[in-house]
Length: 39
Image 1 (spheres, rainbow, N blue to C red):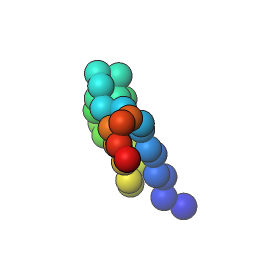
Image 2: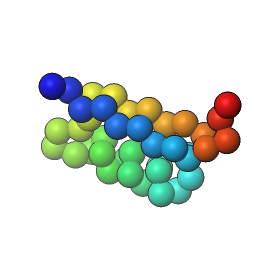
Image 3: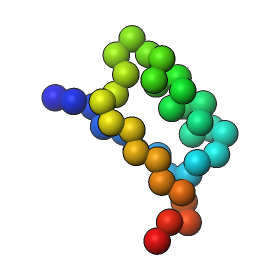
């Protein structure tokens, strides 16, 4: 099964989380980031 993660918000914490996940030993296949005010 492939991992999929989603984040609501595009701030500094989300940036740090995504960067950390992308450099992990087994990064998730899909990462979705959405602005918190998206309609």
